[in-house]
Image (cartoon, rainbow, N blue to C red; front, side, top):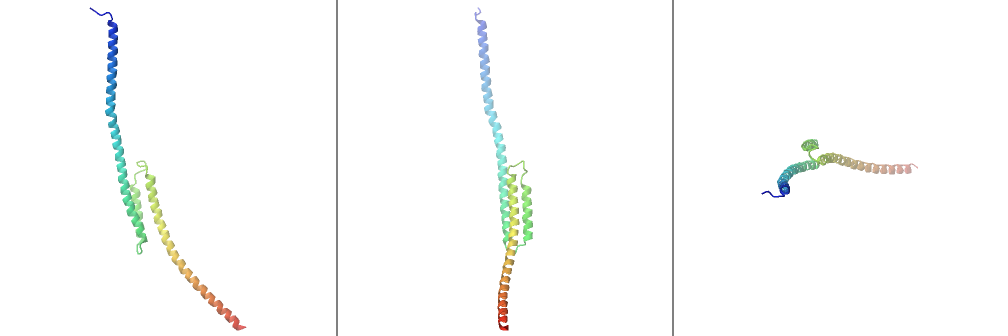
Length: 169
């Protein structure tokens, strides 16, 4: 005995199977992406964390070297130092630091690091100029003393000349 609505039953059964398979496929896709995307995101975040950690280590090392360099620059003011030797040490240290800076495309702080090194180089030059100015300042003070002595001598000579003119009348 065959049912009268066999075609209708078969079409509804196929529709059910199709919707069931579509629902199961959607659920499987969601489960797949639920586990797959966090893994990729996790690996991406790990890569970023490694690069940030590397940058922080470089910054710490750079900072320590900059403190050493600053101490060397401050030692230029100590009397009795061999200034030309100290300056050559400082310049070699600056060159070494310049070489340790990562290339421009590996860090966006390349400009900052080179700017800092340029600033320290300018600072060394300014200290050198300041030392020259201090020497010039002492020379100017000597010249002022000599000028004052010359003015006193001139005043005395003018007085002597005035007295000699007055006596000769």
